[in-house]
Structures are given as structure tokens and as C-alpha cells.
Length: 115
Image (tube, rainbow, N blue to C red; front, top):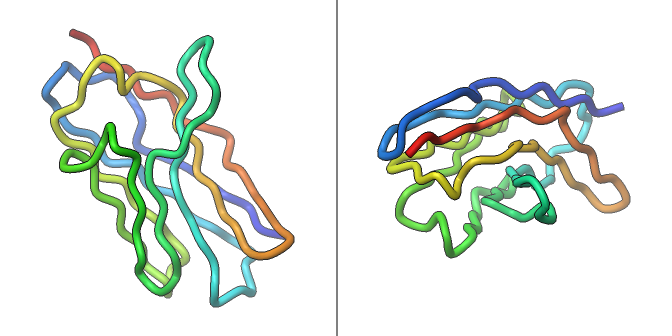
């Protein structure tokens, strides 16, 4: 059973940076997609960025040029470097792990950007 553990959220001023980390344990899979979603109060959960085990990345338009996702296949980890943070980036960030037939979520980590 795949289990995700996130870290790195917190409070930062607008224009600052944060780095989120997510570790996937219990995964026997070598082909997968991991990513980050976020949910602000009153909004639906939305994709921020994801990366495949082959290194292909995908970003929401709102974070392109500011956020960077990377992964470590050997450690089954994914990172999200967030720069030039804006107040609208505030929300709970969830790590996600996907293979065919399996979709796993982390517990979420709060990111708050003060203006």
C-alpha cells in the first residue's frame, strides 16, 4: 500500500519561497506520476504541477515560471520549489501518486502567503 508523507509548508511573505517535499513509501511501481494539487477555502482542488517517473512535467498556467517540480525516482520523492509566491497561492497543498488503477493522496500541508 502506497503512503505519502508531505513536508515543507508554512507561512511566507509575498515574493518569498518555499519548498515542498513528498515521500512515497510502499510503492513497488517503477512507472508512475506524482504531483501537487492545492485547495483554497471555497475552491475545488486543482492541479499545480506533476511529473512522471520518466521526467515529463506539467504545470498550471498560474504557476508557470515561478514553480518547479522535480523528482527522485530512487527515493520515490517529489519536490515543489515555489518562488515569487503570491497571496493567491495560499491553500492546502496535497501530494498525489498515480498509477493505472491507483490514486493516492497525502494528508496535505498548509501554505499561507501573506501580502
